[in-house]
Amino acid sequence: MKGRCLRLAALAATVLSLPGCHVPMEPETSPPPPPASAYDVLADRCDRGDGPACVEMAAQYRELGELPLAAAYARRACDLASPFGCAALARAFERGEGLQRDPAAATSLYVSACLGGHAPSCISAAAGLGEPDAAEFMRRGCGAEPVLCPARREPAFVGVDPLDQANVVLAMAERRLELGDCYRRSLARQLTLHGRVALEIAIAGDGRARAVAILENIREAPEVGACVADIAASTLYPPTTSGEIAVVPWRVLFEPGR
Image (cartoon, rainbow, N blue to C red; front, side, top):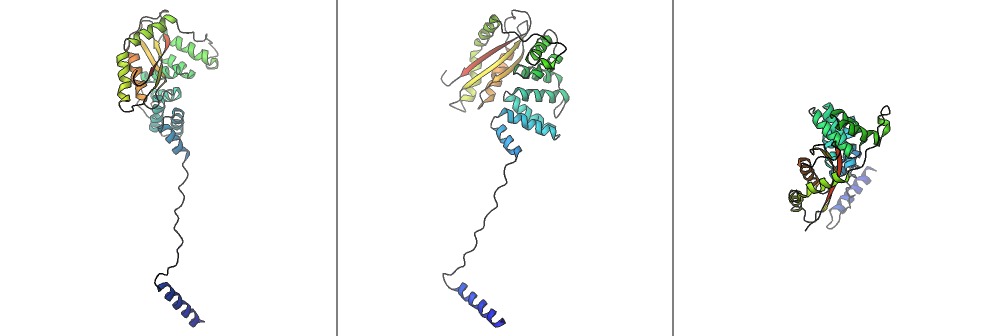
């Protein structure tokens, strides 16, 4: 038996040594890549400009106690005009969670979130504002969600006075060259860039802008909306018709060649 095994081994060695003979080997296969985690999917969506995904990332990191990361994702969401993102960033500033505590910044962000449609932020904004602004934001929050303030149900937020609306349009038209520069700087990098920026401007009775919220922005170039909002915030408007704070919508369309 032993001799037979030796003969078979010698035969195999002879075959393998013949010219042109080879024994096919099993191809090596690499293991499949692991599936993307939920965090990876959300982070990718956030990087691509998905505001709600950034808000979810901020919430997840806050639950994990990673407060600086939570604040960073909340800031990204707010930059993408998400009122929920602005509310989360305001809370971080208010409580000093991952950021240096800054009540003034928190109030400003609560105002932006409120103007973007986040009713709880209206109540938080009112807490940081003086009269008559505080009463106006309380009315706005309670009118949108009465359950937030059942003990003091205020009338719903009233419409915009046509004269206040016209005054804002005229004031912003006087700054059209600066507004155009906001767009042209980004257009130089993206030659087909176009889109609309929509704001809500909270104007005090004396015509000073108290807060500006970005309701709609150019997704591919959010810096355009931020630049436009800065101009709106630095513009002096005529006094409001009521003598109290007025929230006035305003929008502009940017297209190449216009």
